[in-house]
Length: 170
Figure 1 (cartoon, helix red, strand yellow):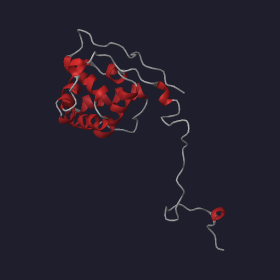
Figure 2 (cartoon, helix red, strand yellow):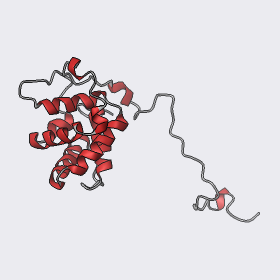
Figure 3 (spheres, rainbow, N blue to C red):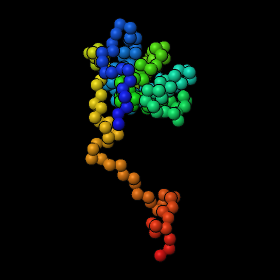
Figure 4 (tube, helix red, strand yellow):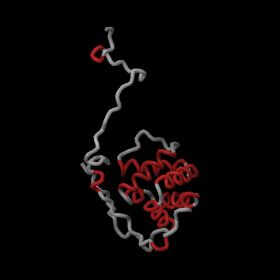
């Protein structure tokens, strides 16, 4: 099952009205390693007002239908969801943010060391959001041959295996 895409499709989103910092931020979301992006977001979200963090979290919840258990103080979880969401569905969360919050988030992320070291190539970027290969999500992110395997219960796991599994005497 595929979730319907939001209003934004992969397209040329660079317009005269786009804030230059927000554009650099979009570039980072599409090109920087996930670890650097999450570290930059944790730092940025930690500097933002609680109300702005709440707005970011609500955009994540609304667009990705995740994060109901996350609080606005849990910057690492918000960062993780934000980065994964933007990689999975480029532009959807950003489009849901009010412009002032987006610009604030972009400024804070751009100002971090992990972000600054990933801005090479920005001058050559055409401003297009990437086209996501939806087929890689057809099986929940697993390849066709991978199967979910529950690890075997160990005798030290603390779970009772009951009489059917040799839990009784011999």
